[in-house]
Image (tube, rainbow, N blue to C red; front, side, top):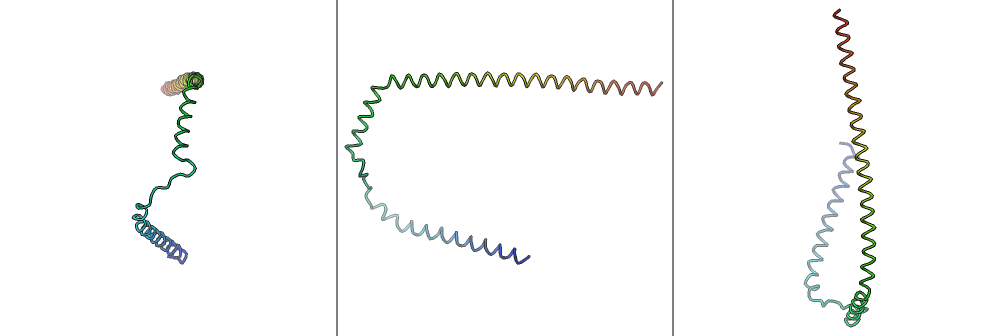
Length: 131
């Protein structure tokens, strides 16, 4: 083993030891603090008091009730356009598949003709050789 290989192995060993020790240290700190975290009360959001949250919910419900017909209309238009787009894509893919099938059939016919020509030429050579 060369000196370079040994230094690379030493570096990997040191890095592995540091990673394991760091993980163990973090685990120890977290386990020490878990009981204290359980005893702490949950903080209340200062900018969203309960009254304000309730008002926001009520206002949102009112707006949604008033605008449901417009939202449904927009949703209907969007879904219709998506449906049309998917049908166009389906038609395009179907055309591609049809073209690929026709190309494949043409290639198979050409390949069959090629092998027929070869077999006929081989037979002619055999016949010419016998005569």
